[in-house]
Amino acid sequence: MQRGGHGHRVAGALLLALLLAAPAWGAMAQEAPAATGSTAGAADPATPTPAQVEQALRRAAGQVQEVGGSGDGGNRALAGDGRASTAQPLADALTLHAGEAAVRRVPAALRRVAVGDGEILSVHTVGRNELVFIGTQPGETNVHLWLGNGTQRTVAVNVTGSRSDGVAATVRELLGNHPDVAVRAVGSNVVISGGELDAATSAKIAALQKLYPQVLNFAGSDPVGMRPMVRMDVTIMEFNKDAVEDLGIRWDSTISGPIGGLIRDVTTNDYFRVLPEDNRTFDEIREQLPTRLPGPQGYFGIATTIGSQINLLMSRGKAWVLAEPKLSARSGSNATFLVGGEVPIVIPSVLGQTQIEYKEYGIRLNISPNVNSAREVATSIMAEVSRIDPSVAVQGVPGFLTRRAETEINVLAGQTIVISGLLDREAAKSVDKFPILGDIPILGRLFRSDGFRGNRTELVIFVTPHIVTPDSPENLEELHRGDRIEQSLESEISPRQNSHLR
Image 1 (cartoon, rainbow, N blue to C red):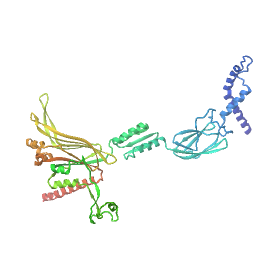
Image 2 (image 1 turned 120 degrees about the vertical axis):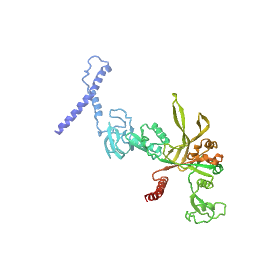
Image 3 (image 1 turned 135 degrees about the vertical axis):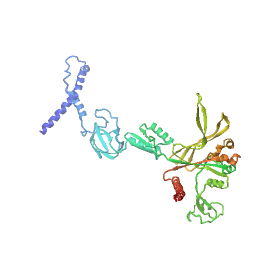
Image 4 (image 1 turned 180 degrees about the vertical axis):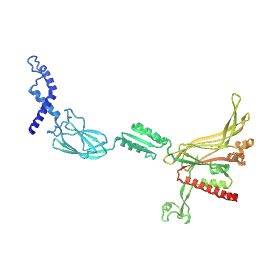
């Protein structure tokens, strides 16, 4: 039975060889008469000659030769069909992405291939000396090859993540690990997600999408977006002009917030000592200076003096606080403050009917803060002061004189913005013609001020932004302040209620 089976396999191989060679027989038989120039007595085209049969068998043997057959394949790099291979030669190390395929050739015929970890790498043979490597999942493995010339080779293969993983890592690095942005590889794409982003980050993502078309940006799609809250502490003050010049409205446009500094004097005072006694930083510097001063003692304190100067001016009667509103807004939103009033304006219609519209006047502040990851606040401020101008009244309806300042500045949280010069002495004269202006909060007190009417004082607005969270000191301070006010009211109301019940 075994011999019979072997005979059937041999016969089947010969039959396959004859079938594969049949087209070649016809071609060679048709070309034979032309090559000899004979037109009579030629052999039947369907009957091959012994030489043609031998040549066809050799061709068929080359096509059906399996991996592991004898022979070294020579030094030629041939594919399975006898054509020259264009694949790169196989090196001792190979790196692939997951899902990537690479074709490599070896210098001799392959006999056997062994893969260390089939879950990481899949290897397929093509022809006698070509291999197809397909990365399945990230990891490291090796491939051992047995060649027909008797040599063996071991190839180290490293399968990394997909190409999208590499792009995701690049995008993440270029964005600077933004805290509000999540970058991850999803299939062949890179997905960017997160809350609403600032303009600079959005511009970076747009540029990255031009470089990497597979980048999908879903950031900023959340309409709520937990953006930082900004509280603006607004202080509206009236300053004596001499005091303003001393304080410095010739300052820069911003005053820095509280600055902690190490301040040292030249006396040996231990009462305010905070630094350890063995701290020789200042002593080492002092020894390099050409002085004979004794070693100073140090303390930690607040080096900023603007708040102290304002308090000093207030105690001397040269500054007055008119209002201290606190405005809160989400980053990217608006906060509006208006103190003033409304004047009814009569508007006649075509049919003789009249309509009344109200025109606002007073002090208006529109503030739009934007916070980035470095706690820098880009603030857009519009400050407007409008007043009634009786000199341009028409049919008893007064006109309005408006002064407006708009600007965009960058400050750090805690720094102060100063706005001044929006009112002049002429504004106070309107009180004489419209006494009701003297009852307006803030402006009424300012208009009634003899110093302002005499052009000796000036209105100054301070705006200080703070980034607040539910547990930030600024927010906790306001909560404690509210509790104290509530307790104070309860202590005042309770005795009155008890006395009423009696």
